[in-house]
Length: 215
Image (cartoon, rainbow, N blue to C red; front, top):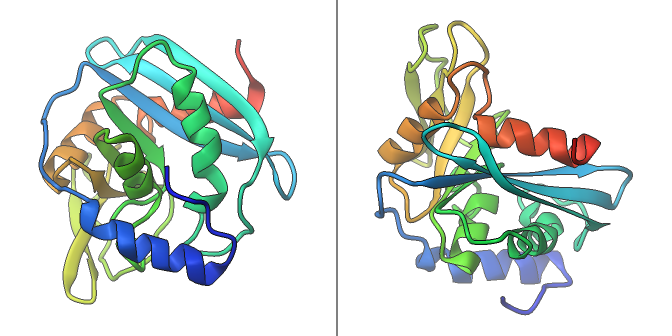
């Protein structure tokens, strides 16, 4: 881990410095997939959850939950600095590292092309995907209503992600690579991991764990 910034300027500079470390090539299949999500219980109190699934059966094989405080003030574009320490602690509590991180947040679809999924991917070395519930940056058109339909997200003329429809005529999600994953592989994984609901199963279960704790 790098030294933790204390100002907006330091945090933005760190994102710019780490951005060249992002790689967009890597494996296209994964035996285990982890969903990561954070739930806030106040302005700064949070619960960070990681739920690991077997990629074929989508059954839970491991999970971890950490309660703590946000490590940075709320600033748009710097959300990773609030959540990464707690998420890393949760990842360290797993019995073994997962092969893919599916993050509730953005990857390249970020003002400095270095969102939460990029940050977690770079500091852990693991393949990572960002799946946003809402748009953050860029221009795009709504995809067709069919499951699997998508349109590109363009930021300053560069494709940084896709707006992906995971279920028929439901609101799409915003997918962008984080680290060691191509955009095609990221979208293929999100679709495969969302057989029944709008959100990929790992994120859906991590959200439940962060909100309500272990069953």
